[in-house]
Image 1 (cartoon, rainbow, N blue to C red):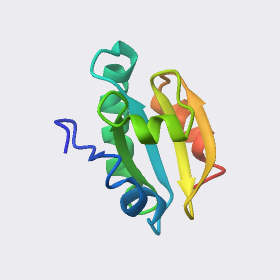
Image 2 (cartoon, one colour):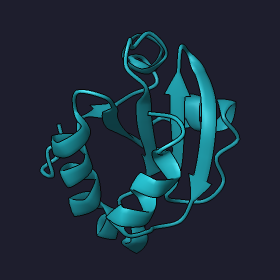
Image 3 (tube, rainbow, N blue to C red):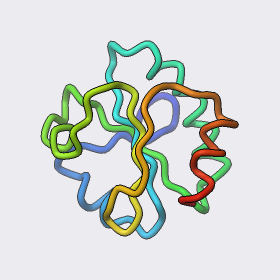
Image 4 (cartoon, helix red, strand yellow):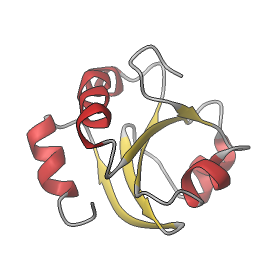
Length: 109
């Protein structure tokens, strides 16, 4: 688990933790060298705390998990993908305030 309280998933655990989740899952594709990704840490932490009963929030480090990153053709960080029933249902690129992120997620959670 990352210091911001958002769990980190890996290539090895992605299928079970994300694709097999009963709740929709918001995955942040992130990297240690990405300043906008670091900006999103408190936003994701707050989102996980507030919406935990309706949405799971996790992070995937693109440098350490190339198979999943390539499988979903992620090219920019941060990329946010919502998975529901094992399928990606929404994708967003770039940092954003929590209010906007919640608005964009309203149709999938």
